[in-house]
Amino acid sequence: MRSKKSWQYVALLTFLIGMVAVSGCSSQVAKPAPQAVEVKVMQVMQKDTPITYEFVGAVEAKNEVQIRAKVSGNIVAKMVTGGATVSEGQPLFRIDSRQYNSALLTNQATAAQSEALLANARKEVGRYNQLASQGAVSQQTLDNAVAVEQQNAAAAQANWAKVQQAQEDIQDTVILSPLNGKIDINDLSVGSFVSAGSTIMATISSIDPVMVKFSMSENEYLQFAKTQPGASPTEWGQNLKLILSDGSTYPITGQIEQVDKGLTTGTGTLSFKASFANPNKLLVPGMFARVAVQSEVRPGALLIPQRAVQQMLDKTLVTVVVEGEKTETRAVKMGTKVGNMWVVNEGVTANDRIVVEGFMKTPPGTPVTVIMIGPDDLQTPAKQ
Image (cartoon, rainbow, N blue to C red; front, side, top):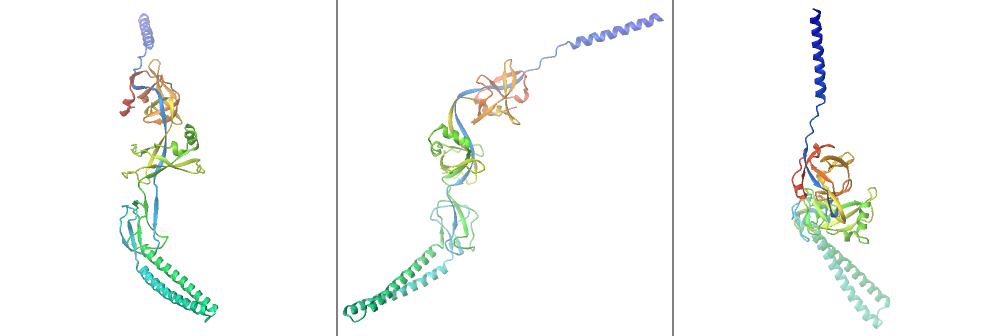
């Protein structure tokens, strides 16, 4: 009986020892190596690059005029609809002219009466001159007659001035467009009363050319000034490009025409206005666009695709393929954007390879299978 129990203890001990041995062997088995991740990679480009700066701007009319009447009255005719394109000298509104016609007739009658009095006074002076030469009347009488003539002449001149004013008032009852442009849709309707010099009847904005107003910081302005010493902004601000809100480039270049007198208080920026031809009326006041201004040509600039750049809080990162075909994350300092590329100021060299697609799946140290691409391949959408 005792020998049977001893045999059971030996068997149990042998089983436990075997389990420990198996466990130790399994722990020594090597883990399988991680599989390489396929990524698209591009070599850092190095070439002489024109540096272009972009500034947010707003399209404005070169000329914008508020239409106000010179005479008061009710609008009796409207010759244009809101939003229409108008030409200089084109009739827009007509104000009731009846009171001004009456004023003209009254002033003409008064002027005619003044002319009659003046003619009579001139005859009196002629007679007194003849009598005074014969000693028939005193010099005082002649002087009085001359004074009356002069008074009547002045009165006639004043009354004719009133006639001219009345004629001008009648002409001013027809409101003409002062420039070529487009009228707004907030114009007045027939029957509205307008007060001379105060009521805004409509607003007309010129449409070709247009101005684009934008601002740059003091440091940016100094950067441009240093690239062309002695040149004014109107000289280096030529061949400006305009990038519209949909990303398209306006086909006509522009140039800086106006520079503000100084930096804006509070923002420290300098404002500019650039002129762009607008023959197809594509640009409309109030549109936002980016003004691209070319600065210096940077020799040997390093460029990488914009979509390879990762923004992490206050850091800018790129993923680089290093020796051993593994990934490494690097902090970089970026410069200006050039098309779909981005100038790198610090962080990479011309020998580095940058992960363009797949960096979200490749933390540092990840083995990768590299597929090299070129600038032409950047036209296809990225897959991260």
